[in-house]
Image (cartoon, rainbow, N blue to C red; front, side):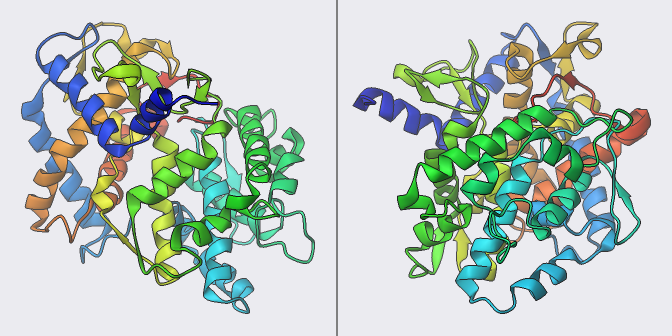
Amino acid sequence: MINNVTASAVACLRSPATIRERCSNILRAVEAGESGYFDLQLEKLDAVACQVEAVTRRQYPDLNIPYHSRWRHFEAGGVDRKAALDACLAHLDSAARARACIDLTLVSVLLDAGAGAQWRYREADSGKTFVRSEGLGVASFHGFMQGVFSSRRDDPYRVDAQALKRIQVADLAGLFQVSDANPLVGLEGRVQLLQRLGHCLSASPAVFGAGGRPGCLFDLLTRNGQLGQLPAACVLQALLEHLSPIWLTGNRLNDEALGDCWRHPLAGGEGESAGWVPFHKLSQWLTYSLLEPFQWAGIRLTDLDGLTGLPEYRNGGLLLDMGVIVPRQADFFARQYSAADEAIIEWRALTVALIDRLAPAVRQKLQMSADEMPLACILEGGTWAAGREVARQLREGGTPPLLIASDGTVF
């Protein structure tokens, strides 16, 4: 049984406020010259804001910017895949449609870690080929539509515990068209993650129902549809509280799973949570991606900027590639890292803290308020797209500036 002190520390490390606090602590320490890994050239943030503005205006000339969400990847290649999904769900009420969309979103986001530079996915219907996040998104969408994640032949458009627990490497390899000539980074890790998700869902029938469906989060968070609005941080809190056992990182506090949360000497903090830096990147990415399914069901998501920027290749790569974050070691970009390396934890923390500094500058250049352009739109407009564009300008294939060994569950 978890004691109250540990429970309080774990709750602290699941809060977006703590993510910001610990990342800001590291930023201040780096600014003070206390880092062995990085210097900062904060005067270059304005050039980054200009780059983000230019990319945003090019992508969304009317400045009608959607959320940074998995649903953007389902639109890859200009194909309206949601229309096909809507047609299949048309006979259901709004709550049932929301459950199905949440099911799809959750399993697709969990499969959305770095794919590697060599992997490709060819979509049979369109004949188009997709890579990286778009490819993973399109592939997982079709897997959902084919009933890969459902144990019921009469109800393919769902995700349930029984189907996930029996997922094997060969199943995902087939879905993602993996071969010796088309390798996917972290395939085994993705399979383990889905299997763990299945066990986690079936272990909590009070939350996920007798069938163990992620979509039952809709009923939990809206009190069976009785609530009309919901703070975004409540969605994140529910994901972290009920799904933390699925993560493969091994990071624990007194045997409590912490997930994407790492020790760093500059993190600060007090009590049992001191020294830990939480990121919860995939859980936050999932939260951003769940905004629309809730909204389509008539639920208004509030306090979107309670979440943080996402510390991953594109956002963090933009800050490295444009010279805001400057490595101290000459061979920094030549090494391979793991998510647990201090330098990577520090880079990710700087990414979160610097995106918070960048956001007001981007809004000012676009002449938009925080309400008009929440962080979810800045990421989409935005920092993620700019990071990818700058990477393409600097490196063949648009590879990220860092090489991080991935198990498929963090990046």
